[in-house]
Image (cartoon, rainbow, N blue to C red; front, top):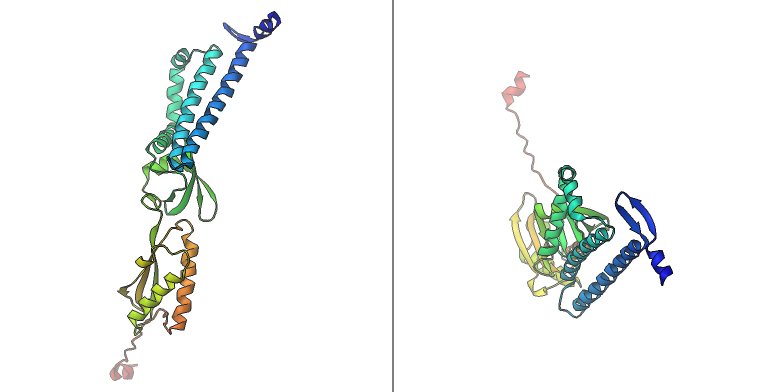
Amino acid sequence: METLNKILDFELLQISQYTIKVHNIVVVFLIIVCTKIILLLIKKALFQKSKIGRLDSGTTYAIFQIVRYIIWVLAIGFLLDTLGVKITLLLAGSAALLVGVGLGLQQTFNDIISGIILLSERSIKIDDVLEIDGDVVKIQSIGLRTSKALNRDDISIIIPNSLITTSKVINWSHQSKKTRFRIDVGVAYGSDVDQVIRVLEESALEHPEMSNRELVEGRLVNFGNSSLDFQLLFFSENIFRIGKMKSDLRRIINRKFKENNVTIPFPQMDLHVIPRPADEKKEE
């Protein structure tokens, strides 16, 4: 026992009045291990509730992130206290330095505050499909300073949290799991309007991923310069990969137009030639 006490009281480092002994390192190690174990237990408990349906995955992730940051802040405070560092004295002694650092890292602090808002407000959650600056992305993780997202080309994008909180963001997943989309198509003048609408709606119903089939609707929306302009309106839960679904629908529409002799016209322009008077020709 005396040998163990001697080992624990052995001085590893001494700086002025601060002394780091072996038992300080042991306590630091125990604090880190206990912190990780506590976080692991909290994570298991939260995600267990998510599996049984009490919490959705986005809310579970947000709660765990907030709890994780709080616990680590407390753990770091205990670590500093164990090493003999007084936090109040440290903050007071470095007040001027902190002001300078704060001015230099103003945008970083802005991102961090935005991250806290996103995690606590939960307006943006994991797997939400967002449209930010014209780019459609799926949120993979929300951090304290940045969020990680995946765009439709499967490219990972790191987004500063302040961009999400201060910009106009469209959340395609916020209200419902399905969203209404549209496909524009023009047909030649003289085509049977009722037949075109019927073909468009039948084309939509052929696609296996179509949601709310009773809400599929074809519309005549405009008399264009070269065509009668139609829209096909439909609902789909495949929000993030909607580009492929639209491509499939256009292929079906093109095939059924050929089967029903419906023509998609080329742009047309009428050219009027005005003949010159005979007296002008004589003068030349």
